[in-house]
Length: 183
Image 1 (cartoon, rainbow, N blue to C red):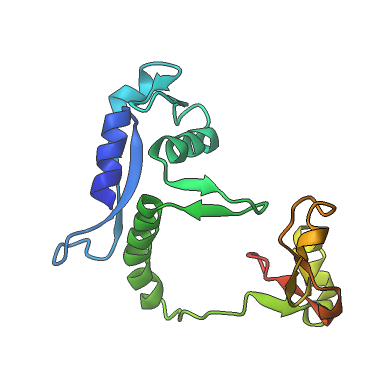
Image 2 (image 1 turned 120 degrees about the horizontal axis):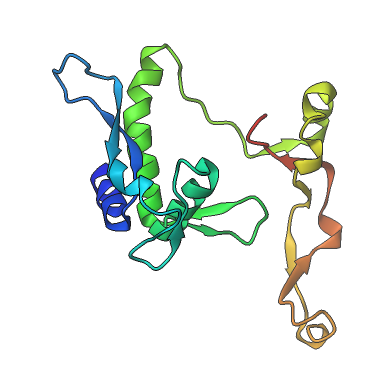
């Protein structure tokens, strides 16, 4: 929650900007207001030690590094075993839900409607928009098979102890691309 984030920021001695909805019935109802916390502490040292023992880069020095430092110190996400993916921990997911609660009414007020699209897209579909795909094609993950099979016990040692492997008979006629976020 935003309260938890503010408390975390105070505990870490950070100058943190959070977005907070204006109270219902106020003149600024529905508008996002930026709230600055602990601004004096931000100017203090070049690096500050958080309560968790991690160094936090001051925001005015390098916003991108500061953001990653705060996310790490707050233990909001973990690295996933898949390149480019993160795992949202419970508090990180709560922050995401609160961001959605704040922004969704504003976005819907503009007439935008939510939609979900499939995660997997046949390569042939993306090939129809080759110029659009060109900018991110190298970053796409491709799914080429549709099932795994168990590795027989007697073959596991030769295959590095693997319990499953791709079934070579399950090759897709039209491979899938994992939908790029920018697509």
